[in-house]
Amino acid sequence: MSTVHIFITEHLDSGRVRDLRADLMAMRNVSDVELADGAPHDLLVEYEAHTVSPMAIVQRLARHGVHSDITAC
Image (cartoon, rainbow, N blue to C red):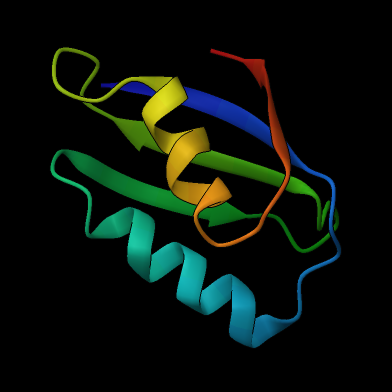
């Protein structure tokens, strides 16, 4: 398993976070998506690196109109 830390520019309400999390979890071989309560712009995604790339995750977020940057892998 690998983890990517993503910074989201927008402030997301709980409904939008729920939708994004569900969509990312629907990606094949994404096993967990976490948004910290104390850091509402930080998203951690756990995935299988041999089938999912960090860029694919960022592109998936962009389809929802979310601007994001990879801060650490």
